[in-house]
Length: 215
Image (cartoon, rainbow, N blue to C red; front, side, top):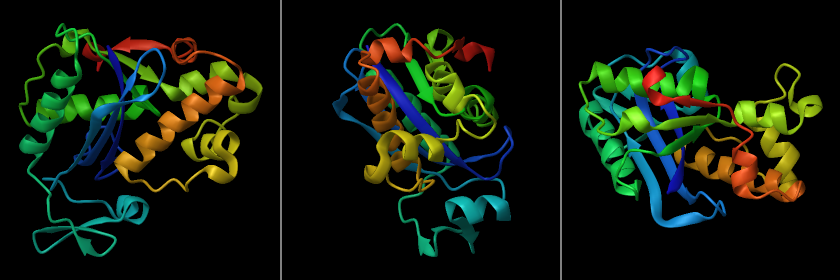
């Protein structure tokens, strides 16, 4: 069973925001290695307006009916229904057991990404068969348990901090591109495991776990 890391870019900071882009990477749940054909990326033309604060962070704007990213048109943006259905289909394809028992991992998953995803699935009436068995993991809680003195203080659990601490000069600046940030998060978790000579499974077990059905 693969573990799915994912990230969302949205129209604003709230849990009711529309999704603008989804990035995901499937990794082996034992080794943490990326699986073949395990990447997903989709841009969505949101129904809601994009808040100026969000645009300053992720670069997205809607201009005369066109989704723009840092001033360039996003040619392959789809409707919310199309984008969300494509993501659900991707998750079903990655579910090797076909019982919906996937693990979904994001940074700040419990407070933001899982809530936004669930709200968007409801808002746009997208069915997600098997989602009642999805398990959520959050690398914020993982980091706090991994090193409470380093990542316990306020602000020390942010992805940008983890990139600097565990990838150092090899780290990319957090781009707020959903797929790029997901790939970097996978690298961070593997680097954390290597630093303490833990297996990927052992380090993922540090995260608290919640059912997706709780969102």
